[in-house]
Length: 461
Image (cartoon, rainbow, N blue to C red):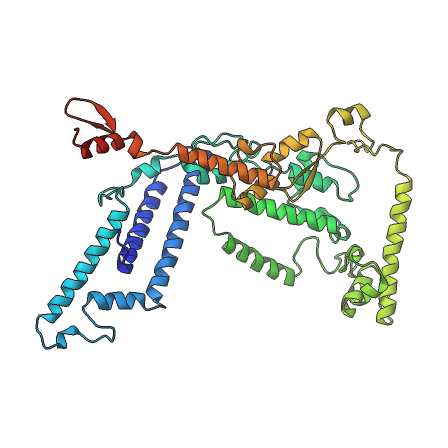
């Protein structure tokens, strides 16, 4: 296409209309299964993103902050830089001459473009681009991609690992282990966790203010949002979050959040399980004094303590409860069973056998730089984590698809170098018309394009 601004505008409008027709055609086809539905959704999502980026460029052109569009229109209309029509010249043919000059200028630009791009393909206006809709990415359950021409699209879908079955199930194993590591009464089974992970009101309120529980909830939210983005790419996530936030604020104002009621329904006073300050964040009374006095009073009232006196007394009284809690936990530690080798605890609350500990290599610490130097204990956990959401998120941040080619790679530098080599190998497999396009002379001899052109120039053919 030409390099003129008006031609860029026209081509951008044509591109938007073409993508809109492709979206309509794609959505008219009913997917046969869940995998086809994912392919279709991500194809449409990519086309929508292209429409958005093209439209943003069109908006910049129409805003015309540098007056380039106005000057080009004026030049094509035969106007001077001051906007005065050339028709006012004494010569009646001057207006016609200016128009011919503009047409000649456009022709020169078109010829210059095709001289720089001799292999540019002429686009048929009747072409419906149905071939694009017929191309389907082939993805194995492990996330390995078979076709490189759709690498970036398939990399998104490859993040659905074997356990997730292309978005059909949730892979909550890592979150389940993190939940069991919280200071609850006893570990639970995985099936039980799947039933209760969406019911945070069953967790005692005093445990919700710990840092460990906060990190667990942040990881849970991050995984669920990431899973939703992969399985429902056409949904407006910002709009859904806005609606959920509005509903939550209304329920919070009406004291309708289950497990966070401000008053007890039984006796009418504040529950002792509620507190408004996480004492784990404060190591001295002076640090606790920096908290707002109202918050200190609310925390004392929630614990059933007296809220009278000065701010210093409030902080000392509240900090004393932290020391008592630590003393209780230390006494509980004294009652723990004998475990000199620091073996992991089994489901019965006792250390696992030492032979099982050595069999699974649980004493071997393996770190992954892509996951933020996250530690994995044992070979089994290390092999499984390549398909988990944490590693997939790290690879997505690097702009690298999480395929089988990158298994056992934990270094960011090694992953980037391997991805560069794959891209170079992909470029070698591209079709090269100079070497692969064939020509036949009058005698039936077959030559490639380069050889045929050389012989023709020498007059041998």
